[in-house]
Amino acid sequence: MRLGGPVSIPEMTPGAWVDAHREMGYRAALCPCTSDDDTTTVEAFASAARAADILIAEVGAWSNPLSPDPDERARALEQCKTQLALAERVGASCCVNISGSRGQPWDGPHPDNLTPETFDMVVASVREIIDAVKPDTATYALEPMPWMYPHTSDNYLALLEAVDRPAFAVHIDMVNVINSPEKYFANGELIREWFGKLGPRIVSCHAKDTLISTQLTTHLSEVRAGLGHLDYATLLREINKLGPDIPLIIEHLATQEEYALSAAYIRSVAAEVGVPL
Image (tube, rainbow, N blue to C red):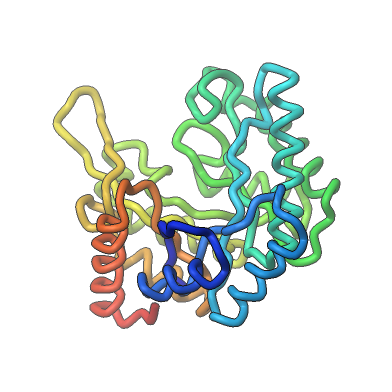
């Protein structure tokens, strides 16, 4: 697999971007370009990534294609199409988003999020995005969330079947689907379930950790890798089964020092279980 994460540099140039990833020991990256960048800039970063053997893992399309506000929904769908087209241009593994919320905030829980009607809306939005772009190599993937589709491996499988597009792929974030004490304490089994059912369609993964507290009622906090209970040995073994180029992207940390600590922990577990990074 290829470990990666955000980098912080004073000036975003292809050379500085590559150097920052080499300094962190990353072989995977988030997209350094935006859809507003001209063709020359996009190609410069894509070429630099290829020359340095850095895989651009994902282009974010973070928005709400299910928004109850029609203007926001239209903007979100357009953003998803634009970002999927950018993923195709830079050779990224995927364009990733969440499915969206029927209310506010855009990524939050809502009573209608897990209904049959919403399932059909997700299918329609994903089809519209993919059919508008028709990517040859890039894919569109949904990051699982605890309170919206897809939040189980079975409803991810159902979405794959319903959408019925080769360019629809799977993005894995196991912390996001650990939403109960049962799943928390048996998360190794949960990891094996998700990878066993969805493995051939997985194109990218996120790296973080989860920690349960005694705060009532059930309270799960997202923490840095190594400070929680996620079974990283199992996670790394399962990702490794998919091949040498599946990216694992560290996320949601405040400083480069924290990213370095997270990377060090993941590398230490990988060494223990004999998984190359």
